[in-house]
Image 1: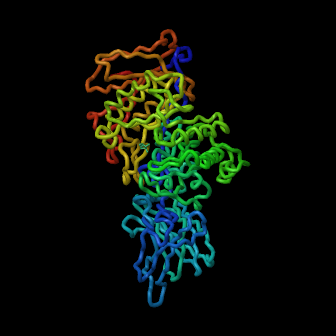
Image 2: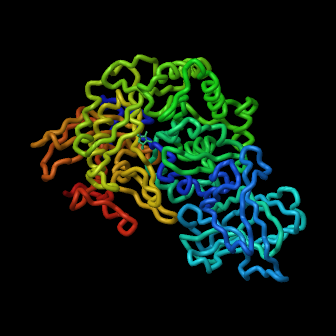
Image 3: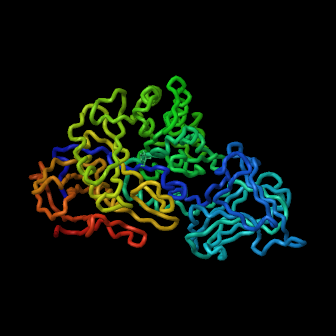
Length: 599
Ligand code: AHR
């Protein structure tokens, strides 16, 4: 519809209303959005005590041909472990190497997606007292087909040397591996082996197909990097931003003990900020406040943690001459990042030291950056917070019926205090399956309720966003993927209905139907930036099982409509509410757009 929306009395929905919550869970980042193909590229995942496990690397050749171990022999101070390969066989002599050579291979994250015609940059660091003669290859899942290969000969690598090569694939295999092999006797040390597709979003390292799926949601913000991932089971395994910035080769990586996997931290604090910028979304950084799931820093000694967070904000917002702003600048981003929101921890309210620690962070941040909005973990929807905050976190995981009825949760919330950030909501359990229509319908009802209460709720995001099917830690998720495929669950398609809501006008609408308790609706209008026309969208969820005749009235439209140029209807439905999408039927349940007003 083409209407003169500016004359209608109504409220503006916050520009940040609907966004996404990205957590390093289910291999969302490592082995997911972050396009690095090598898993455990620095051989650090087995720990600092050597010899150590090199999983998921494997050895090509038996112990009569080579001996593989790890040593603290790296040229990088923060990740000292390197691989040592003692090659016993040779091109000729008594112990001849097999034709394919001996060495190591990395299967990536359940297979590397190598596609014909695509180029991949392989980088590794190497040292040897002999001339280096090594083959770098992508090999297909049968272990036989060579998809791409390069032979590297270097006369002098007696000091650690960086080798970089671009391989172009001559075939396609979604379950490939990267291997480094030789047929030359001697000792070779290897470290920081990376393989990245050349074609990532803007060359920033984000897997294109997954980036596009989240960009299509037009998220107003991106919350990162968790979730419980921020906290850690133990503080020693929490996300520490300083260990994730600077040259990728120098990052130590860490074991995320909540979701039980290692991350090389290629997707670090800088990359998250870059991701937000590339999406055109505001970053919402959730930082560790000295509290994990099992241990806590006492408030009396929290100040170094507070300074650490001030440093992080300076990294994002300080000019290129500042201490931490200069680190960002050397990473290729002299301009500041638009960091306006930070959350003090995740689900930590009520823990012994939360309030004390929170107040220290809040005061310090507000003193230096008064404009930054600080988010508390304590729920202020039903009672007044006992701490100053700009926003408060609200998390809800429940069954479908409860989620639908929670559409009215904020109807009576105070409009004067801090606003809600519904930073994690999802239907879980049997109703959700691995992503059912039922889940999407209940969540849609909940979101309509939030939209109608957008004077009390400033932001909302579904969780979790991604799942790699090889490491399903949490059900159900919005986007499902493996090394080469992806699809949106009904919940993902449901979120498309709210794409125009950020910054739109919420119209005063009423719904009449019988029965009405299984229905909820809202009406918004917004101006399309491209054609400068005003549009009206009415959203309705029927959570019941019957066809219903309904009437929706919108205040103030009469006399304001200049011209109706057309209408369209988008429907998300299926014959069974338990229906889900899958790799075989990726669009079994998805929104269908129909021009015209027909039933
Ligand atoms: O979204 C998955 C997890 O659920 C988050 O890590 C945590 O905050 C919540 O309990």
